[in-house]
Image 1 (cartoon, rainbow, N blue to C red):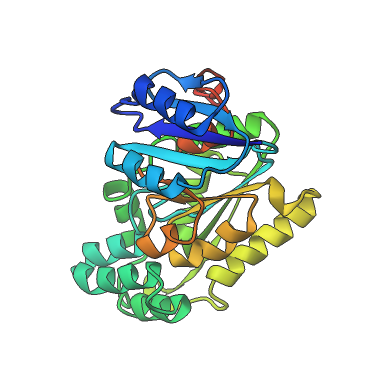
Image 2: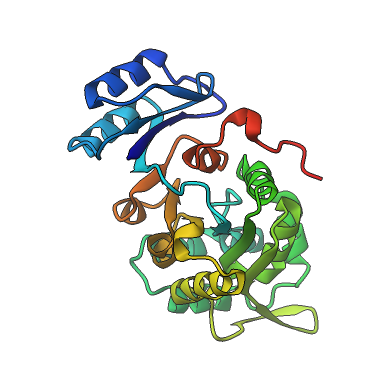
Length: 294
């Protein structure tokens, strides 16, 4: 059996019951289950519909995310999440550059790297080199003034952990940011790249080896081994080309507000919902969300 899930923006909550009923009837689905009124609903299917992607495109035009996936084993035992443009709304290196007055130059390289047009490791070295001479304190300035969290992150982590899952942040960005974000959202562990600092100043270098696409896959493999779980038990979420390895390896790989080349390669795509949509994809109803984590 498979399950189809429809998710609207939590801010707008415009999931039309008529759309859900029409789609369920057209696809010969089971009873409609509302996970959150006017926001998320699901129904079971005997097989994947042949016109799934045509219907997905129509739902997108209506502001609704549509996902079709196997019904069995949806609740995952590990969360593996990218940070930049996934757990937070920004790319940290772009914000460092903007604070230093070289934003457009760095942002253009970032966009191309995240869309898979440039090799990630080389692009990161090139961008970090442009930050040479900045004070280390610029990290605190950017965190305080430029970084905002993607809605739903803390609830996602808290709810999965309440049901026994392990949460790990794995980023091609920098530990100076990842450690703070991981702590704020309740992650159990984090991995990222280290900016090299001398005498309180950025040197323009990043510690080797750089954590990129292969390192994210390695993190998934190592952590599942430590936990004694299968790769099928992992929910991975990201938005950039360097996330594709872990998204393809995880049992549930979700492209969240992702770059076009990433969406093309992912079965599960969230463009209208926030991080709480990942709970709906696992079959959690909103009244099961842990909204006030300890």
